[in-house]
Image 1 (spheres, rainbow, N blue to C red):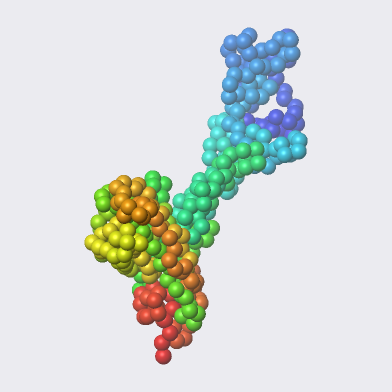
Image 2 (cartoon, helix red, strand yellow):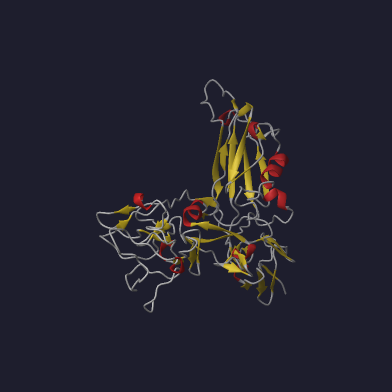
Length: 405
């Protein structure tokens, strides 16, 4: 600015006297090469198609602007910052989204720090050690992040889609840090942990080591921190979550979904040990105990055999590593064939799951008896406490939940 015009720093503000314009005769302007022009009227050898002789102004070709069409135009995006033109009307299209400088020689945006994209339309995710999200997470827009929001391990079905009021849905970005799945998944390998195309790496490498068989989430705005193992405070009395499966069928099968993970097919005649194995094979469940209960009375349609899940009275699933009040297991993909009850009994539903006992144990960081070192994701236990098994004994959770003398 300083009263002189250059090709790179042309503000189009009429702030410089241009001695290179040709105003002789009835013609449109042209700009000499040393000022970035082509010495052609309106910058075109076919100026008769570009010059408006009525107004003596240039009708520039697509991608060019300036008094003599001498400047390359940069692409436009929704402005990050501008002045509202009416109530609730703002963020109009602007070159480089108003957070970058337009190079008039290349027509490319040179974005301000913290912004990226061809039109500077997105806020950059944080970096750690020169890696986006510290190489421990995935950079996502608010639009995408909303779909991964969870409560108690289950998706919220939240959305944050582009609209007049959510203009930043595809502009604001943040890190989605790697998440652990269950309390003791130390046998997982990388190939098992693919979730979808974007999140293949999200659950990998969350093992905290030594005592902590527990995997925990990475955290922080740049995913540089780690949460510590959680456990039950032994000073308060609590119960494990128990969920009850009732099934009546003579053929077919079903799947169980828990915290967005689904088991292999569970057959109608799977014994307790096999059901337990299939539940523990999914990433959102660590250890459970499955117990079949039998009742030969007519009141329960004669379910007296413990051979399979659907010909026992009911099955109790007790969660040993997932603490607190848990979301319900859900049944999907049912292909069961109905068992008909006695003539004087109503037909029993094919399958349902209810809560037999609400989980009331705490699930707090370091079991409330230590402090978390977020740089390594491990608990430093208070004197007299060490790692527990989550059930009152000494174990490998790394949670400071076991008192010793």
